[in-house]
Length: 155
Ligand SMILES: [Zn+2]
Ligand SMILES: [Zn+2]
Image (cartoon, rainbow, N blue to C red):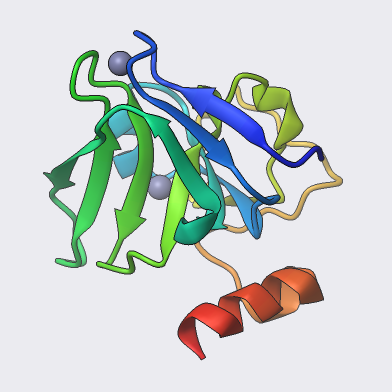
């Protein structure tokens, strides 16, 4: 994966650059993600917040309701409202960047499928990518370099 991967919103007012590869890429099939995106799943690249360079624009958070009661803030372009990333549980050190907003979304295929229990039946998952009914243990699945990054953030 090339460094300096760029992306942005639909209207072009918001542009960003990712300064390193993501720690991990989630494909989430939970019903919240389906509802909030209006489609079958969401693709989120988990990356350290300080690797996300805002080139232009002004992402504004929208607080989403959650079952857990923990905050989920979706950041959107102030002009066209495209959602570009999320912050979960107030953990501002990590961003969940919407892979579909990359200029080349094919660069970040999912490393894991989660909440497969609510996957739409016509979505076919490849055997080669781990898939879980609900969630998974990052310590077992993430590459060591990503776990190092995670420890640097959270200890
Ligand atoms: Zn926009
Ligand atoms: Zn989800």
